Length: 589
Image (cartoon, rainbow, N blue to C red; front, top):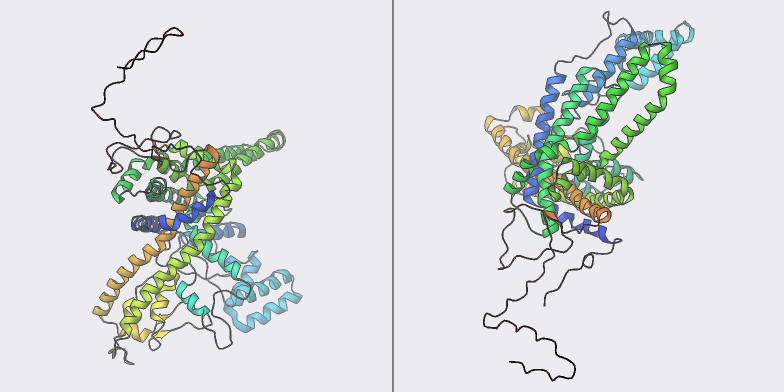
């Protein structure tokens, strides 16, 4: 007998429904999703690198000279260049006096300290006590001793770093192996100080897990930075944001499409079908998160016009406009704040289009309504997903590091390979000269060669390097082999890093289904698909949809079709006419 589906009976109680998030590992660990994530990583890097090269290569660092009429003008241009260097710079630059001096006099004192040696320091110290410029001289001494005696490197290239060189913290294998041994002082070799594990976890591990969201929000945060002035930086950030939305609208949409069908129907679609879906829905996937940014731009333009009128009308602007109309500015600021905070729902936009087959307006309205109608549910789901994801990413990173390390270790066990002579040494460490430096993979693969690899020193070295003598004796075949090995290791590394992106979009899809169930009371197993997306069922009759299913969606709840009646049975006889009471019934023919 067919068993009818009653909506809600097969679903867990709302208190335990979030446990479905723990199925994200099984769904995310899929080669198709890993390939799509790797493609998105490479596409993001190349686009941002081209933009960085175009906008940064023609921007020279401002130096104080005769062409600057005031010190404030120089500091404005230097701060803007520092921000552009932090985003798109491609080489290390040290801090100098122009980055710290508050006045022109302090700048001159700092330059004299930098170039004059000990005598200059004694002179400035004397001026700090007796001269009329004592305040500037004293400030220069403090600034020089704190920042310029051993100047640090300015941050650079945060929006153009390749996925193979981006700093993502310590290697998982080195971390585990370090916890199993102790240094000469009896301390475990771990990347955090005593009592700082939580800080390390939140500052280095969680940011990698939410790297897609961080890369989406980073250019927006830079855009609102007070130093992001001028046409060059504004245009650069706008193009960076557009490229980010385009890349992850396509690749993220394809990942979400595979995840949505797998979560709802427990079936898999091919990579070509997912790419075709993302291609057909690309305009919606791209513009859904773009509308709030355009809206912010319109409000900003209105505020700019209001600021120009207020600023150049003097007493009329101060008294008639700025004073009475300031509540309007507050209201517009509130609207902008609501729009910016609602952007944390961006991860729900791709799953909305992938699960519903809808347009950009539906994705935008659902993401904002789900976030603001069930804000604490949304935060709880993400807290669970991130807590679980940290453990998963660590495990995947550990296994990937272990794979390459054991392969390299096995090669190096062949007898007679190592030699103290650089010309005759055949230890396979040279094969990893071009391997990724992110997650310390290169360090993991070359650090065992103690003869030709130089550690930078310290308890926790950041990287190991081959000695200059060893690199000089690397032949052309050595370098060709190292390049080929670097390509294979780099591709494998992309899949390992891509798991974090695959998990992010898979968890986003699961959270979308859970939020849809909570807000719209829609079953978790409903997903949109077009005819031909899935293989036809093997049974003669198609499964009956759930009574709660919407048009254009399919449900996993299948109702068994009733058995067909035998062809030989006669049709039922027409019902007999009603007889008066007391009359015996007629015989059935």
